[in-house]
Image (cartoon, rainbow, N blue to C red; front, top):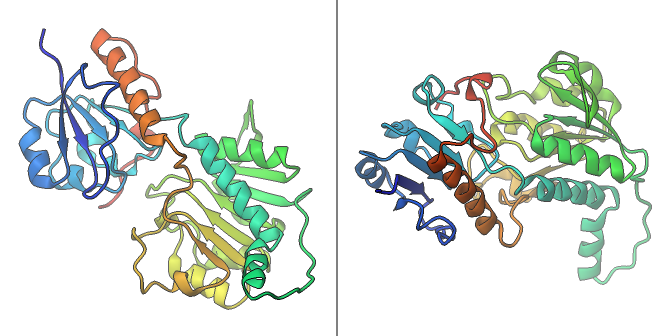
Length: 320
């Protein structure tokens, strides 16, 4: 019996993930460019997507693919009419990055509250300067986006003694998180928190969700953490809020343009932490993602329901 044909999209210049766990289960073609993708599509049923920034699916289209598995939790590159309105099954790699991202969020909140960045700077200057810092216990945090990353973040921050409020698309009571407020309540909640943490996917509803007006609603001295997608915030408006002193700082792991251009003003702001979209990348993560795909590939071949299927219709379509 012939093996199914699978395409593996990998960014140019990046390592191919370990293939050992599934190389014998499918005929795999690695592609990096539009030309390679277009040539590999005829007859291919499966796409293993290892590039969360790829534009190949928008430029070339999905062809006759029947299943797409992403190495990331986010699926915004798949939110095209051709895919959302099709019968293509989409699954992602849950369980790999959620806890590491939550740990990164906890780390940057502690870093800012305890002024650790300044401590390192003073050490390099050989300066002994006593300072007071902010508490973690009872710190008020608003987590916007109760998906897998948001859930892990809420539970970890609460475990560290923080007072965490959660906002999602709709109001509801969650078994793990308790009360979730609706987006419509967001503005009323912003002025009563020390930190706002964004764990949102990029959709038409969330694009530019945090703009000049919402930054102004945040209390003076609050901080922003974004691990969702860069376009969820209006970057120029965030810069204005930082430069005016209204916001005390921001930790950003995602940006509208990645890699962040060297001339971007975020680099030069001492109260902005720039992280290269790496908050979830623990040592060995590529192997764990490959194992997620391999497990689903075996299910696919056996005709069994796949793990971690994503309903794209609930997210809609995004513009290029």
